[in-house]
Amino acid sequence: MIATIQRDLADLGIEFDRWFSERQLHGLEPAPETDHPTDAVVACVNRLTEAGWCELGPADDQGRRPVVFKGTREDIPKSFRDTKDRVVIRSDGRPTYFAADIAYHDDKLGRGYDHLINVLGADHHGYVSRLKGVIHALGDLRSAEGDPNAHRWSGERLEVQLMQMVALLREGQPVSMGKRSGDFVTLTDVVSDVTTTTPQSGCDAVRFLFLTRKGDAQLDFDLEVARKTSMDNPVYYVQYGHARLASILGRAEEQGLQWRSPTMDLSPLAHDLERQLALTIAGWPEVVARAARAREPHQIAFFAMEACKQFHSYFTQGKSGDLRVLTDDLGKTKARLAMVAGLKQVIVNALQLLGVSAPDRMETLSNSGDA
Image 1 (cartoon, rainbow, N blue to C red):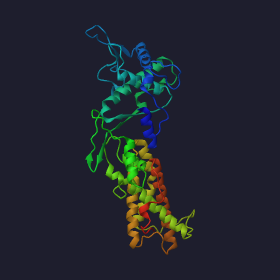
Image 2 (cartoon, rainbow, N blue to C red):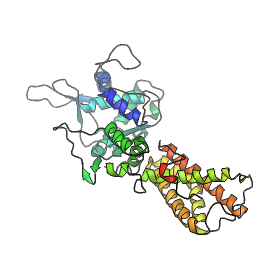
Image 3 (cartoon, rainbow, N blue to C red):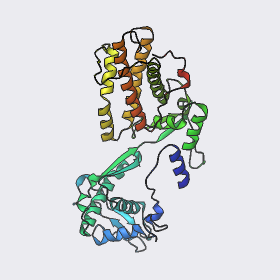
Image 4 (cartoon, one colour):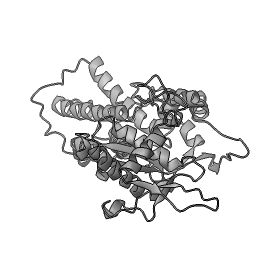
């Protein structure tokens, strides 16, 4: 199953530097850095017990006592403090999922990074503060063990991104899937379906559509929308805009126009649509910075769609009005070509950040009357 998931993600251009199996934590297989399996879960709980972070809980009806993590301790910051102490080793000796999570985060922090990002399902929102309390306890534990980097271990080091579910639709209707019935549509199925029905890459469509929603907002992924080669398909809309921009620059090159200059005069860009496009281009760096700070790649997708919307409007008016890029006025032509080149570059940058291709040509563009 893991191999299948790895293959499917790789087909979508998603790769991880390291895959970590829970079997490694429980000593059922060796970790990458070791030759011999070790039960890291039990070892971590034992260390926490010795440091006073775990203790025996109330006995069950057979007199057996579980081990609990003391997440309610007052030395844990209030915002990270749990509402009750949680069982990590059941009274029958079996570790809980929480115990495995503690050991896994101990492993992650031990790799020497300054910042951790967890991706959890939105239904695990109540788990966030509990994990931050765990990080605090692990920092205290490492400090007691003489770790010189332990001072960096605090709940603030852990950032959690909550992700909502994706609903797969076909012609606006939910596609039925379920664990009990065994009916599933895999990611590879979706990519293959889109690829076989459209000229553009199914990988592009899937990646872009997934990135048009904030992670904590539910996404309705409609296969029919992903298949479309029209402006109703967001990725097609953006790629088509890029191809139009590339076509205009290609025509200028065919005509032998020498428009590039280190002292470009942009004063001819006087129309409101041109000024709007110039402001959009100028705002790109801040969009990237804001998206990175907020961990919100959908801001990049929205920027690309809005920029292409503005350009498509400009292009349409230019077909019959005074907004054609290639004109008899050389100064105006040079300024507009500079604007087109700048917009093309930021669209390329946006698509590259999203892992989506930026084709210079698209089939339906051949008779569009460019420039």
